[in-house]
Amino acid sequence: MEQHQQAKRAAVLVAGSWGTALASVLAANGYRVSLWTRNAVQAEEINSRRRNDKYLPGCELPGGILATTDMRTALDGAELCLFVAPSGAMREVARQAAPHLQPDMLCIHATKGFESESLKPMSLVLSEELGRSRSSIVVLSGPSHAEEVIRRQPTTVVVASEDIAMAEKAQDAFMNSDFRVYTNKDLVGVEVAGAIKNIIALGAGLTDGLQFGDNAKAALITRGLAEIGRLGAAMGANPLTFAGLAGVGDLVVTCTSKHSRNWRAGYMLADGTPLSEVLDKMGMVVEGVRTTKAAYLLAQQYEVDMPITSQLHEVLFQGKQPREAVSHLMGRLKTHEMEVIG
Image 1 (cartoon, one colour):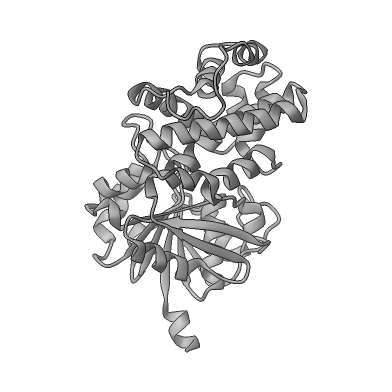
Image 2 (cartoon, helix red, strand yellow; image 1 turned 60 degrees about the vertical axis):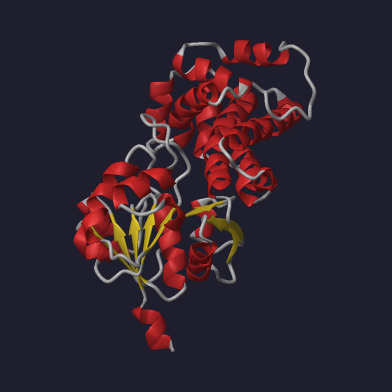
């Protein structure tokens, strides 16, 4: 049995913090994992030192992970391919991977965002580039900071696919005593929630940076969840998804944790630091910035009211001062709390 377990192979594309952490989960579950990166120096560090210090400093990687810069090598013999490229790079990575995928390979993604140009979620991007139906793609999401997953701290996530059998295969691949996995058929809802929560986390960082206190942040998180629900419902999601791990669970952890890149970026923006300088200091992708652009346009496309997203769009891209944005939100016309659409 042990030999059979060791024979399983998985490919993880790419070797950022989240990709590396999820590779460690698969390795713990008996997979031989090929971790693909464009960076030869990073690959050498992973293979020789069992470290990926740019993204997960101080963390030792488990055995069973081998980094490579060759896409064919990464996918050779793999029964599972996990895409964890940033949203802006997903199409290119999928295009490179497509010729090397086997027809029966399980394809999963764990990226939270929309493609800026097309406004498409990652499952659609993958479907187009891989030549597979969207129903065969699985998304992994939920409250799960890489810094805790790599240290095997208890974490619970959700995997979603329109084909529940695909979600169950992903559940079997990832679930263990430290990493609990639930299934969900609402692919649309899980993707929308995972993307939009990053925008709300930027706002939470702003409110903390402005020293507005817990009341303001609690209100922002709650009304942010309403925005997620409005857009999700308009796009065909199941509203119950937003009360689950991909919705309120991920929203809370991203808006309150020191590990959250989006929260940290928002906190730095609060003192007037230009966005370009904030992103330079972060040194890693802040998905909420790119997603704010996409969600602002999606709100117009679906005729959905998203005031927090709209004000953050003005702060990020139109030079509006954060305090002015908050004043605008507080001064909006009165409305009913349970209003979902419109």
